[in-house]
Amino acid sequence: MSDISNRLATVRHKIRVAAEKSGRPPEDVSLVVVSKTMGVDHIREAVEGGAVILGESRIQEAREKVPIIGRDKLQWHLVGHLQQNKVKYIFELFDLIHSVDSVDLAREIDRRGALRGESMGILLQVNIAHDPAKFGVDPEELPELLREISQFKNVSIKGLMAISPFSVDPEDSRPHYQALRELRDRVTAKDFDLKELSMGMSNDFEVAVEEGSTMVRVGSAIFGERKYV
Ligand SMILES: *Cc1c(COP(=O)(O)O)cnc(C)c1O
Image (cartoon, rainbow, N blue to C red; front, side, top):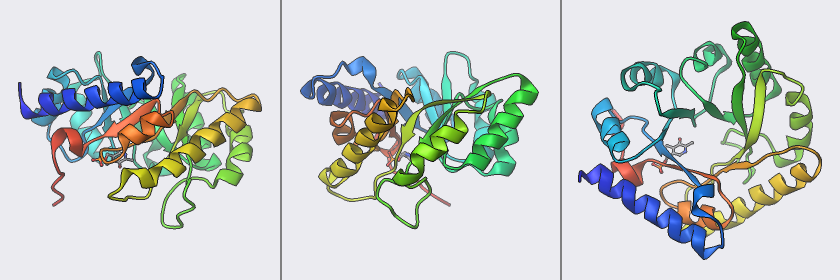
């Protein structure tokens, strides 16, 4: 087995253990293998190792890689920020957008979807730690955003996403992930069916699973450290 397959198996095992520890069925947690900055050879190794959902953070990079790897039996998720002028590309690349944080962006997705006769699944990104430097809607604004976006016929809201502030201690993420789950439960009680909680990355995905994550986004724990040029 390659290093990538080995590390992928280890991450899967840890997800299973964390789910069982908190009394959740392990099948309720999807693993989004975040392949940003990785070349197609590495991505193919991950797919051979069993990856079925790949995550990318930039449209330009996805436009280079998705056509080569393909979408057959695979899902591609956009986990990074989406600019409105790039929305025109998402339907041919992605199955789910994790990072919608404004009505305008959702409206543009809806408009492009209507032109194609297609609907796009989205998650609403919440700035759960109120970090002014981060993308995401403030938790207080979420109900209003949900009300407006749920009117759009070609956008399907599947759940919420959050990025925890980086910390070496995964326990520091726990309160943020608890807050996202509680927020989800509160808005769900008011008629929105938001099943998915996209939370947890390489450094803290086990804590996220214990707190109810249904999608962990893991890159470097599988591929090794990213080299940015
Ligand atoms: C890069 C990235 C990840 C994966 O990060 P790792 O720490 O390498 O697991 C997850 N989510 C988002 C939004 C990212 O940009």
